[in-house]
Each structure stands twice: as C-alpha cells, then as structure tokens.
Amino acid sequence: MVVRFPAPLSRGDVVGVSATSSGVPDRLRPRLDVAVEVVRDRGYEVVLGDCLGVGDPASGHVSAPAADRAAELTSMLVDPQIRAVVPPWGGETAIDVLALLDWEAIAGADPTWVVGYSDIATVITPLTLRAGVATIHGSNLMDTPYRPANGLLSWLDIAAMPSGTSFSQLPPGRYRKHSHVDFATDPGASELTLDAEGGWKRLDVGGDLHVRGRLIGGCIETLSPLVGSPLGDVPRFVAEHAPEGTVVYVEAAEANAFTICRALHGMRLAGFFAGANAVLVGRSTAPDDDTLTQHEAVLDALGSLDVPIIGDVDCGHVAPFMPLVNGAHAEVRLRGGAADLTQSLC
Image (cartoon, rainbow, N blue to C red):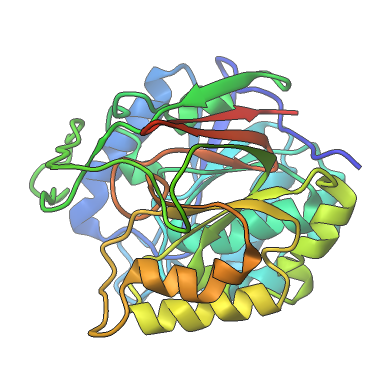
C-alpha cells in the first residue's frame, strides 16, 4: 500500500482552524487574527471552527468537550472543500478525541493536510499510522507568522507542493535558547530571535552518514501512551507502507531526563522503532537530571537499536521549527559537520 498525500493547496482553497487540544484565551485573540491573515495572504480562505475556546472561561485546558472537538475535526477532514486543517497550537490532552473520531469516514475521504506539533502529534501521527495519510509535523498556526529560518521551509510551502515533489532543508546552525515573545504584547511578531549556535550531531558515534526511510514520529510525552495500541502501531505501518524502513524522529517537550528515558524504553519495547534505519532527536530544553542528561537518556533507551542517532535536530519545541512530513520518504546526510534532510512526497 502507498501512503496517500493530500492534494497541494492552491489559491482559493479552504484552511480550517480548530483547537483540537487547548483553546485560545481572549488576550491572545489578536495573535490568532494575525496568523489567520498570514494564511489568507497566501490566497487561501480560512474557516474558524467553533472549538477555539475564545471567550469561554469554562474551557479550561481544552477548547471544548472532547466529543465536540472530535466531531469538528472529523467534519473538517471529510469536507471536500477544506484542504488543510491547522490548530492554533498544542496542549495537554488531545488523546481524549482519538476514540471519538470517525476513523472509517476519515480513511474513506480524500486526504486533507493536517498540521501541528506538540500535543497535535497525538492526532497527526495516528492519522498517518492508521489511515495511511501523510501529515505535517510543523509549526502550529500561532507560530505561522514567523518567517522560516535560513535553510528551512514553512508548512505553507510544503502543503502547496504536488505529490512527487522532493525538497531539502538544512540546519540553520542557530536556535532560540533564551528569547521569548509574549504574543499578548507583540501579536504581530514575525522575526524569530535565534540567540544561540548549534547544529545537528551524532549521539551514538562520530562519522558521516547517509540513510533513507519513511518519516514517522513526534512528541515523546504525548505519543508514548499510544505506542502498542492500534493508533500507535508502527510495525503495521512498516509492513504496509515502509518496507524500506523508517527514519523515526522524537522530541522531548518538558519532561525530565528520567521520564524521557523510561518513555523511550517503553516505546522501543512496544515496537515504535521497528524498522528504524536512523533516529532523529529534536533539540530540547527539557531538564537534565543529576546523573542523566537528555542525550544520555536517549542513548540509554535507544543505543541497543544499533542505528545512527542524530541529536539536536530542529524539529521540536525549540525554535526554529523544521517541518517533517509523516509518511514522506526521507534521506538524511551528515558530512564533515554539514547536514541536510531531503523529503519526497511519494
């Protein structure tokens, strides 16, 4: 079976916005409005869903009840007029919508681009694993106004590419370590301040590498509870869609090194790294522990895979955000300190 890639976005297409996890408080509505205008400036219509949490003080850590969020996401994914769905951002418990989605209807509809990261990985990775639909692990809507760092693309660039397209991205060599933007005071922020230097590096051993495989992965904290279930069944995905093997990417949001170590051990034991030809580990500011760093946690859990492990990749909660397409064919190269990742939408 082949992975299904959504049709490329073209002018006049509709992009749906639904907060599948956390909603947007009133004080951040101006940033949401700015982000929507960025998408409209690309020539797309934008439809705001009912599940946004704006003006609803009772919404708490989610934008709406799970049944409402699941129904709205399903409706957008089966609506032939909506060609992409992007949430404002992640959150904490998108896992509560998974059992409520109409998976049969979603699998039977023409595929739609779904974009996001963090808690949205809880949704997009199962869409690829269970429905065989490519999804984009990239910046959420609230970060979309930022211009991509040198060497990287926006999810808007990728969603407009025809199936079969190949594109390469390079590590910018800089990342955001200390700077922080308060969208409430600067809703129009469009320039990322990258205040530290750093590139990709081998965590296992030194040396150059050139590996291929289909991309799959996401946030460790939100995906680890799914692994071993039908919604996190990587061995099935490998058998049906990736006989050439996978390039797995993982990233820690905020959990300490011991928690990440245990989670990665569990993911490995449950088969998440089955067929892996390499593992990409996103740069993280999650805390180390006294006797275990984040990098050591990765090696403790995944060193026995005996595959290349590349750390400090720009694909996690630390800006800049490199979009990765779940289901795309990937080629990763490291040569004498230089690196690049090529993705093919086929």
